[in-house]
Amino acid sequence: MTFPTADRADIALLLEGTFPYVSGGVSSWVNQIIRAFPEYRFAIVFLGSRREDYGDPKYPLPDNVVHFEAHYLYDDLTSRAEPASRPGDDAAYALIEQMHEHFAPGQPVASALQEFRAVARQMLPGGRLTADDFLYSEASWDMICDHYRRFCTDPSFVDYFWTVRIMHTPLWKLARVAKELLPVRVLHSVSTGYAGFLGALLHQTRDVPLVLSEHGIYTKERKIDLFKSEWIRDNRNVFQRDPTELSYFRQMWIGFFEWLGRFCYDAADPIIALYEANRLRQVADGAPDGRTQNIPNGIALARFAPLRALRPAEPPPVLCLIGRVVPIKDVKTFIRAMRRVVNRMPTAEGWIAGPEDEDKAYAAECHALVRSLGLENHVRFLGFQKVEDLMPKIGLTILSSISEALPLVILEGYAAGVPTVSTDVGSCRQLVEGLDEADRAIGPSGAIVNIADPQALADAAVALLADSEAWQAASQAGIARVERYYTDRMMFDRYRQVYDGAFARCPEAR
Image (cartoon, rainbow, N blue to C red; front, top):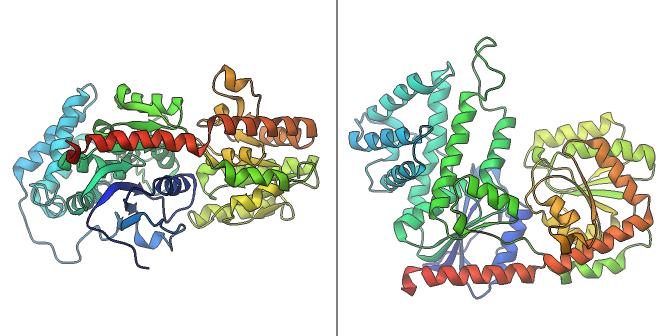
């Protein structure tokens, strides 16, 4: 497949593991934003794990994407050639040591950020801290050995050595990307993490404004991933472990992503959250309060409102989870809830509409759970589907997730007249019950239940589907709420102001 290239662009979107290769809410939002501003020339920098982890793009590139480049952070982490002996730059490694001293608890964050900025600049091509020195020099080896002896509580030096390498090596790839990126007027990252590091480094070296939009809080989501990850080793025996403490390697990864987040927050203006709880979390994680703001997601009413006329008179007994089949969506809780739903409503069906290729092992476990519960005739795996095709056929959208931000699928359901039952995550309670007094006066547009509670999920769903009057009231509340607060026009107007402000601050405008 051939992608466009250009010699300059207006806005560079820095995307980690999302559009155009991965479907989902963030990717849909990126697609919305690009198409909403046809007057801007967009460049896309896609950051992925390994090339083999991605297939063909899930989205066609809009016409105003004039440049696309993809970089895979975990490909070719080590050289195939025999490395030459090298001493390393002692001054550069002294700077790293100084930075690590400032990372210690109780040290001023401002001092650590200053050192972090200095180290990041030295990682650029031509800087004193090279990737080859990090991978092969005596100075790097001595530093890794010293840190292992001083800080590591895990007895495996081999695992420590490779964890340090895997964690840090992508930063040099990103430094090269930053050096070679085409000229742009504004940077827009859709997360902190590696994409945020790239944005902050570009801001630091080119003085280009950086906009940050966080749908979920990256550090929080990575913590959830790290808590569940089986690939992170803990080599301590049963007598060495404190069950109340995280393994050292998990702590390393968490600390690493927290500092990438601080580096990005330090550079970005504005820092955008989807709702107030996430904005407060950003501030708690180091974002300057005065640079933060909320811009909720919005959906195209014209796309979904006509679907209301296609609905049957009575709500279909179909519960639909629209999303990727991955652990963070907790599809297993939905499947377990369906056992109780079917016991009380024998004609009910549970649809799971989303791709299964992101975590094939988890998807296989979900299929096995369906069989073990005897739900083969009631739970259907549909794969990726057009939301418009689903909405007239379903009675409820279901979110059983353990983490969400402001899910577009709830808003899309509302616009089509479909209420929701959701776990109490992200902004879901706000979307169902209302944010302020005027919003709450609209009435509930579904139900909120606790995380990982299949019984409560089932009971809430049955209560709505079995009571036509309650279902109609929730449907009307959803329609009123999305039309009043969550249209794409409102979101685009806010982002036009953000982009106008950023363009006014770019070097060309001075």
